Amino acid sequence: MDSLFDDLKRMNKRQFLYQVLSFGMIVSSALMIWKGLMVVTGSESPIVVVLSGSMEPAFHRGDLLFLTNFEQDPIRVGEIVVFKVEGRDIPIVHRVLKLHERDNGTVKFLTKGDNNSVDDRGLYAPGQLWLTKKDIVGRARGLLPYVGMVTIYMNEYPKVKYMLLAGLAGYVLIHRE
Amino acid sequence: MHSAFTRSHALAAYTVSVLAGLTFACFVTTAFRDYNADTTINTVTVLVRNVPDYSALREKNDMGFMIFDLKADLRPLFNWNVKQLFIYLTAEYETPNNKLNQVVIWDKIIQRGENALLDHKNIRPKYYFWDDGNGLRGNKNVTLTLSWNVIPNAGHLPNVVSTGSHQFSFPDEYTTTKM
Image 1 (cartoon, each protein chain N blue to C red):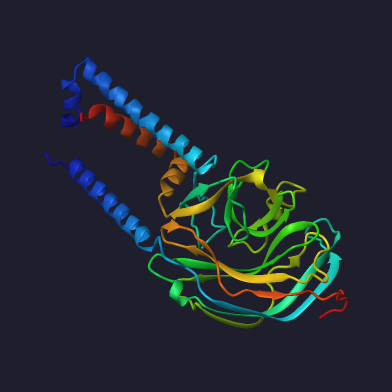
Image 2: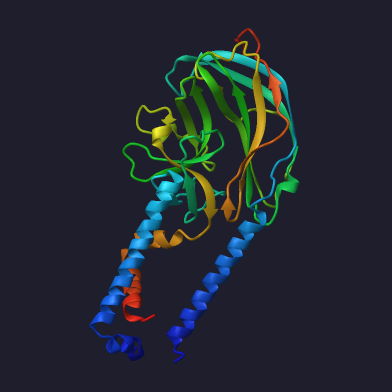
């Protein structure tokens, strides 16, 4: 443990300040990457974690999905969309089952989870029969398994989150490049 | 110098980078594959009813019904980065109300290792074929296509429309009797 803090003891004020700044750089680059992805993909949340088993066996709890939401890219049946329903905080990842597009371009569609036996009308807001474009957060374009488990653990056990954050911050502050 | 902490740290970091490298290789080796295939679809019986849609607003809407045959060999689509195929049969048509209607009437999940040689006879739709109004009776141009969504272990999720669709028309009279 002593060797761990050796670096810190040998630092002077300026060097310590430099470590703090580089930690700030890491945090702000992460934020920049996230915001940059939002611009590139057109989605308000370009990466989501699958939280339920309603799309099994395609997606399991903890899988990471990469989303895009380009305006010119039409929504079609069979695509997997991520949508938000009024009165529910957590976005839902389900597949489009039916779609009707009018002459003026307005489109309404109905979704269903691959692992659910009925469509999603029971999940929508009371009286809502269809989703429209404004409900859509994004469309699933890529899949990375398991990685999202980290965030699920962090949300379920906040202690893990604080330990991880403290560990990371300590590591960056103490270790010299 | 080489404490248990540094050793386990090095091991964990190495494991994570090897896994990341393998996952990326899995994605890159299959990213540019063509997942198209031929299918044969045929309708055996086609009819249309005008009944209240209790799943929606209880208005009388057109509900199509067909019995169909389906043939497709999807075995060549599988490779080491295909976990599952989600195949779906779409009915696509135009009505005075809507310039585009797409309704999935049947779907199936084929996981790796399961039989991917489809030869179905006389299948009934899995979902009701409700129109958004009364646009099915006498509709002369309804197209059935089989498509699939390729689910990889890791990678992108292409939706492929297969070659080989089937066009049919709905009869000019509603069916009122039970089948």
